[in-house]
Length: 279
Image (cartoon, rainbow, N blue to C red; front, side, top):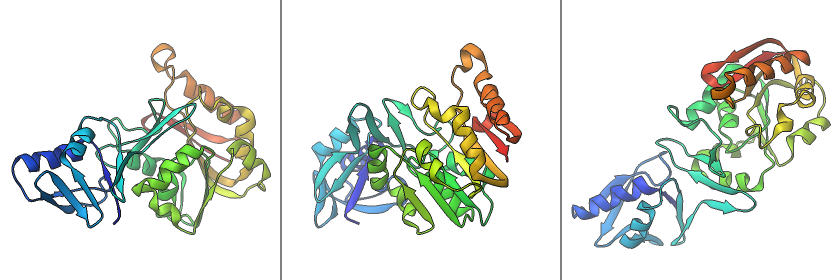
């Protein structure tokens, strides 16, 4: 394998096995995709001829909640980046999510991020569709669009640090499929260069309003409308900002703006925190 992933729960499982003097443990070292048998030798766990973790390293991992560590060439590091913002891959009981300045980029409360992506894609993607994934993130919605039978997916992501985390996330590996085109660009500028009625479905899952307000405006929605073929479908994740103070007015106002640029059958899907619409 050559590259192994750990987080606090994984480390605690291994430490518990050590405390019980076990010489082997079955555990996932690829963030819950698969389980493999690891050999325990005194105060360390052996993964292959070139990679091992000592007990003190496992203790360090166990104390760092909501972090993903990767072991490669016997070097242990955290999957995080600090620039103007702080980015990190965050483990869950299923596929990981990503956080920017402490804000999760997937729904993860009561639902696995990978399952969340499937539900979004399933709302609009039909077999044979050409799909636009406006804000690709870790690529989960693009992967599900492909699994649902899309003939082509164009997935756009502008953030280099999200792209770096994506490149090291085992759950993003299916993005290497030749039917997925990964575009590194500002989506609001990129889509202006595309011909009209190019896509059969669009998944628009932008960062929250405070981070990307332009992706919630009429000008951007007008471009999405132009790009959809007649009868094409849009799923727009909105989240529920201001819900406590203002109720669901945010989603209602987004729906009005979509209608204002020409979308029909605009429906608020509260259980998905989003909106579907048809051109």
